[in-house]
Image (cartoon, rainbow, N blue to C red; front, side, top):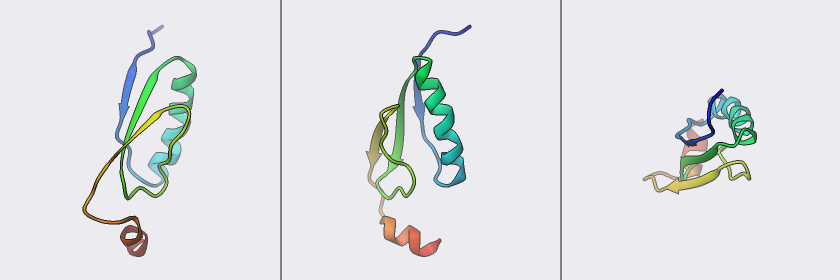
Length: 69
């Protein structure tokens, strides 16, 4: 048994984030408060009702990242 708490999540883009979303959904149902921090050039990381999304500026644009991929 554990008490619900607060989580700060700093995810990476890609499959890492896709897997993590499922874990965050389960933690949210167990009462955890979750804050996700992501760059403003994010591709897959989006807002959700299960966590609060905080965006920070980066010196490159989403289009530049997509072009590299």
